[in-house]
Image (cartoon, rainbow, N blue to C red; front, side, top):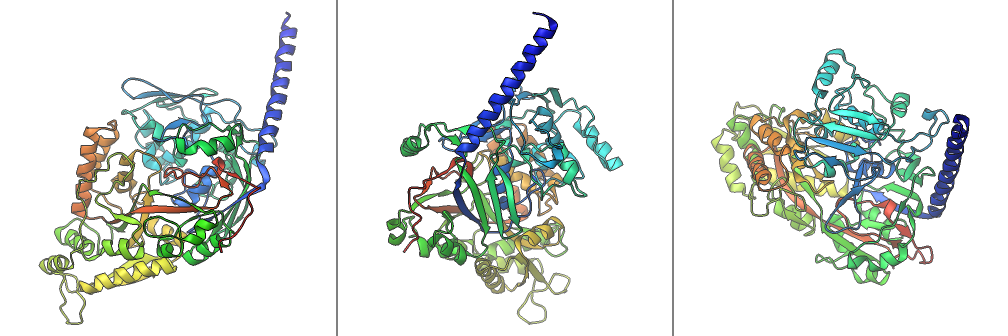
Length: 606
């Protein structure tokens, strides 16, 4: 065949391939039925939808529906298993864990956006390299920095240059993060990356397009309001703090349903067999911060499943997990489990009252922890839907040791004695303790304006009064509290962090010194802890790393930058028309894996 003939053949093949792809895309889009609408709720307002800039779980739910990390957890597999997402296979690694090759699957496209100037934009290896550099770029101040910080050979030099010049050179070659060709990434690491599979399921590792960041990025390079990803959904409407609407992306490649080997999934297999996901064409997300409106919305069938609020457990279920009869009669079913999350109150270690590493400051924080009745929080406020947190790493992830005791028990008498010993005494007889130098001592605890939060406020204030410590509440909406926390403006704040993978050592990254002011909101800086954390990152999961995790947990208990409270038991009530919901702590809002049975009437609970 002549050169012109071969060129014509290649051209014809390309046209045919493009036409076939368009037909395939249309077929996928046809299965995402716009008549199928899933309605869900969030318990706190979102902050924005940039995978490399977000730091709250509520925004993360939406981000995971729009963007694609390289790998994902198989939603239905038990035990939990990582599978390829946008890659042709799992990564190919060297024996020492320091070199990895990742191959991106051809034919994956970003959702259409004007930033692409009318062209279809294919996902490439360069998009992942760019996105991971965004995490490392000092200007981004990425909360998920620890995911990539210090890993790639040659990247430290680029970071140092960026800190000196104020500009990160995204085009400079980096030995440790090489784009070999359009679809291939070659990683060379400073130390073994044994947790690469779990780490690269995170939303932080998802791919964004450089054109989108350059078109919409703010002064920090964040793109919180214009999410453009390769995932199953795209942002259709957004009323901040009220409502988010997603629609199935017409450019999404579609995921054929893979049957589960779990006997519990037999009926789901039969109903979803042969389908291409997502099947649901529209997801409506409502921000309902108060517990009562969330429960009422579920009872009226205005939302399709409900993470049962702890303060209203008796309105829906018994403490043992059985639904109340009226819910069971409506066909509602229960999904529940221990969430891989840790609830804690952190102390700002830079605060002049509660911060610092001297003996009297450590004693103050430990006394506060001993004076707070976490068991009452679990029994009364959480209605028994929790477990006492014995260490930083929660159940369900590697490193958790149920035998370890690395938390203070409720002991108000011991708290009072400790405060007395270190000079926190009531000098003026007004019933409140002063600082050792005689100045007034007032603790300021961050909180949000909801009925549930008021219960925590009352418990904290009552417990602190019992040990002679005055506590005042600083009340703001959740997004504003998060901004204050990142700015170091809060003294004490109680919140929860949920592990998104089975690798638990990452939870300890929330206390790692270099992450101070990012993921490390307490601004805890302890060289001994940081050294152990650096060592743990270089080890595979096993006894040696578990030993280091135990040592880090004991340091947290000793220096008390956190007061651990609970591991949460999550209870989710699901209406019968929602097909395929299965409790998965690492994928808590699995919208793309569900279906809506339009033949089942939307009948509210009576």
